Amino acid sequence: MIEIGYDNPRRPRLDLEALSFAELSGRLRPGRFQPVSRLDFHQLILVTAGEGTAMVDFVAHPCQAGTVLWVRPGQLQRLPTGPDGKPARLAGTVLLFTPAFVPAFGAPGAAGLVDALVQDPAAVAWPLGPAEYAPLAGAAAELITEYERLPSGGELTVELLRLLLAGLLLRLARCTPAAGPVLPADSVLRRFQAELERSFAHTRQAQDYAGRLGYAPRTLNRACQAATGRTAKQLIEERVVLEARRLLVHTDLPVAAVGRRVGFGEPTNFGKFFLRETGRTPGEFRSAERLSWAGELS
Image (cartoon, rainbow, N blue to C red; front, top):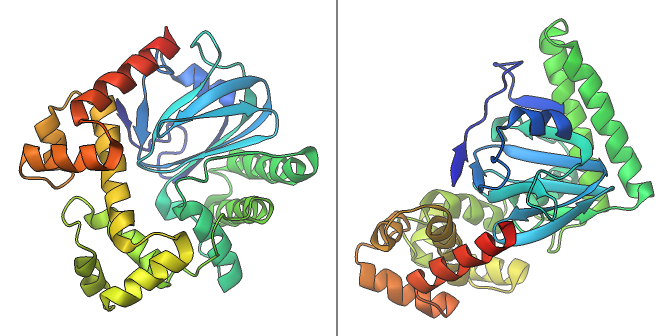
């Protein structure tokens, strides 16, 4: 697995980069499309032509004209490739931006819509029709125009870029409704999700999260079940399993080290937990998944 940190070679001080998919492909050395990478920034791709298949957190996502692909920080991804495993011949716009550049919205409804997308790791790819895709493509084109004005535009252009990104994200949220209810950023569930990202490797106890957030455990559970149909404990365990799967398949860490990274001091306890949650031991899962991807890429 390749860890990739945000780095804008043309605008080193700007937390947003706009480029074409061809430019992104040309930037990467041969062979960098096949290995799975993990980003610490957002990657939003708007495909205008061509076909390929991307992988995000073990799920394959077909990409073609009209597809919007959004990879969040921390997710595993393999950039879109063709059937031969080589970079897909796609045309489109790529927007790379840090979490700090995600715009803040004054209207609670707008903030809730975009926050639901930003926080939903399952909302990755959307095949849009021409009527839905055209406004997004137009917004991206306008953003690129202003991006090319830098550095001459100065701080005003940077603020305009943030507003243009806000408009694009709102358009995306409007045509891709969230699977669950739209909740404000200060809701119980959203606060819990943020704390879960910070603490899943340190505690798996729902009461610890409730205490940190200032809620009764029953209040936290009710909020989680109302929005997702799952308890806080189930959401915690799902997050731990996801991280373990990422580390098992795309690093060479020993199983015991993977267990420690997700909060298990004893390898035996980690093995029992993983077997209960996935139906396979960590070693079995690692072997099966690596064989699967090796076969697909051969």
